[in-house]
Amino acid sequence: MLYNDIKGILPHFPFEGRFVSVSEMSSGNINNTYHLVYRKNGKDVHYTLQHINRYVFHEPEKVMENIMGVTEYLKKAMEKEGINPDRRVLAPIRTRDGETMHIDRNGDYWRSYHFIDGATPYDAVKKPEHFYEVGRIFGVFQKHLCDYPVSQLNETIPDFHNTTRRFYAFVAAVAADKAGRVEELEDEIEFFFERRKTMGAIVRMLKSGALAQRVTHNDTKINNVLIDDETDKAICVIDLDTVMPGSSLYDFGDAIRYGASTAAEDEENVDKIALDMNLFRMFTEGFLSEVRGFLPDDEIRLLPLGVQVITCELAMRFLTDYIDGDLYFKVRSPYHNLIRAHAQMKLLTDIESKLDEMNSIIEELLK
Ligand code: GN1
Ligand code: MG
Image (tube, rainbow, N blue to C red; front, top):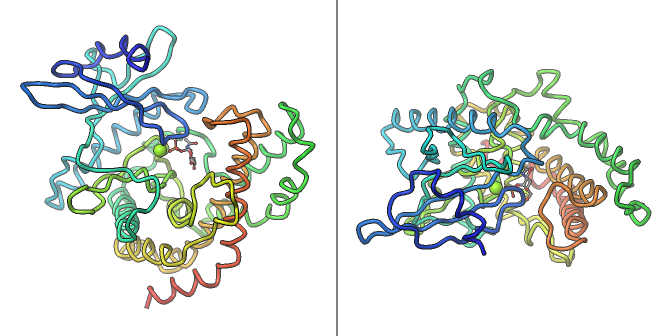
């Protein structure tokens, strides 16, 4: 079945050898990702093939322009430091026509990367030291891109982390009630209205210039980092679709939201969900080990605000999509988005109660 979905696409890429197998990698909520195995001279060769979600990315060309620019830049930054960029930077494969994507008969977009084997994108923290590594590599990522010419970057999803606008979109969705689901959601809706002011805090500081705009990843879940199977070190940051001008607080916040939670992003039993402060500390140690040279201390002190705002933003995005009738995120059931929203709301409540604790860990690490 899977093979039938992609067989028409394969000839458009210069994959080497004989096709052996395809499997779907299921962790992403947006694009469909396939792992391809080919065999050449008795050896397996691996590739990644991705179908880009056009409901989410209206202009895939802009996404690829960013990715080509950023991967080239990262490669050079590593070479300058004497690091071999193989397995450390995503390597896109152009189509046989020399394009960055293949557009199929339906107008759908496909792209491919060299698959980095011997490394794993974990969906949850398997070993605490991995999370230190994830913090470290996102710090390196920001460091390597800190002089990237921001004007050359496209906004692949306009206002992606503009939480103020996200709130308006949420209110509009409630008003439209497209899927007839709003009636049951009084408490949930109230929850976000109560947090409206805090949600806009980062956007306001970016606007006023109190916070610097930086090139950021914007989707820093632990499964967007490859951990080397032998060394347990983070080697490569993947999923560069949302690399855009943003704030360091977004990348820090989203990574903690996802990786330092005691349960999955869509855990149904909310009693299992809390912020694990040991994991918070490990990530922060890794992140600060790389960013201290260029992020001012004042900005570092604001990082916990990122955890709060990004968790609130995503909880509200999940609820908005539930209200809209599940148009944006892939879902496993009609309640999946509501379950996700509830999980993120519970996590946020716990985060709010631990802000002081987060701040004191940061102060301690800044000494
Ligand atoms: C989406 O595709 P994936 O799973 O890496 C989403 C992120 C959310 C995340 C929640 C482009 O990321 O913003 O935080 O789901 N990506 C986009 O799991 O909307
Ligand atoms: Mg991803």
